[in-house]
Amino acid sequence: MIAAALIALGSYSVYSKRSSPQKTAAATRQKVYLIGIDGASWNLMRKPMAEGKLPNFQRLMQNESYGQLKSFIPTKSPILWTSIATGKKYKKHGIGNFVAEKDGKMIPVSGNQRITKAFWNIVSDYGLTVGVVNWWVTWPPEEVNGYMVSDRYRNGHPEKLDQPVTYPASLIKELPPVGTSMERYMEDRRKYGLPEELHPDAESKNIEMMVNSYKQYWSQDRAVRESCRRLIASRNVDVFGVVFRIVDVSSHLLWTYLDLKMLDELRAKDAAGNLTQQDIDRIDEAYSKIVGGVYQYADDILGDFISKSDANTNFIICSDHGFKFEDGRYGHASMKTPPDGIVILAGPAFRKNYKIDGATQLDITPTLLYLEGIPVGRDMDGTILLHAFDPSFIKSHHPTVVDSHDHGKRQQGQALSSGQDQEILEDLKSLGYIQ
Image (cartoon, rainbow, N blue to C red):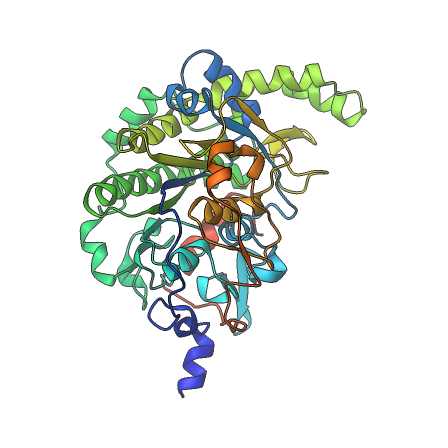
């Protein structure tokens, strides 16, 4: 009975803070905000940034380190954000899709299917405090040296789940309910210059589903944002990690507002193999005018964190992929090469005026661990972005390694069914991620 329960839960007791012996204390104890912006793409940020509409991004980029962040195929958010959180490819971390099969039907993946430690487990092992909010595939929440708000929180109705949505379970009482009034939603739409009517001239069932769900997506990130505000104010931690989705879901939808004449022209050129970089720059600029308001909203979210930072705070900002025009559409899936994401490293530990080259998603967790004075696992596929650190920091912080942060192999559990499954599957269908 006990063995069966451990398999179903993915042997969470093996990697809980309580049962995993604490290592030597972390060497540096840096204050770090790790902010994920799902789908953020430099090509769509350039115009609003040049127009001064993204002041918080500019503030962090000014005299700091930034560049492209290489993505991987398949560009599926559960896989990519778990790779970012572990420094490992999906065959090593165990999350391989949006869905899993259980009892002959497909249900959403769940965190107990992960077979290796994530950064929140590792920093907990080394005595640092950590807060995690809305990271992909974090339900059921794990016991950490701090708190975790799982990705199922954003769906609302926690009573539909037979496992808590937060660790500790009582934390849910401190968080806002998910949902916003139509009046507030329309006010936000006007504030950020989004189209007045979310009914594009495009015949697609997925587009129609996204249109109908867009208020829900906006409400979800609004609740995640407010949760971050409350938690940062009330529960100080060394490492705070969060993922926001609104840029990604908006980018899937709003390209359908592009001028149809221009779309038809560039689709024809693309089909004939005559699409030029100038053409791509032209449509990127046109699209950035439409989706730019969503980036302004993301910029305001970034401002929340900057307002709570001090001179000793370090920022790691990243996305799992970008968006590009290919095969007559904007997207990231089923493309010849996945569009790169973004990475910004800002704060006292990092170099100034440095362009990061060759960074991948797998490098984020090793870089975070080095920043905190924690050894990097030799079994990680990523590496420290050492060239982005200030030379004085490197001189006083020698990188260290261990064979692995895992104690034996974490047993992969079965995906867990819940009362939210159908809603989540419909969400994934609307975005074209599943059929």
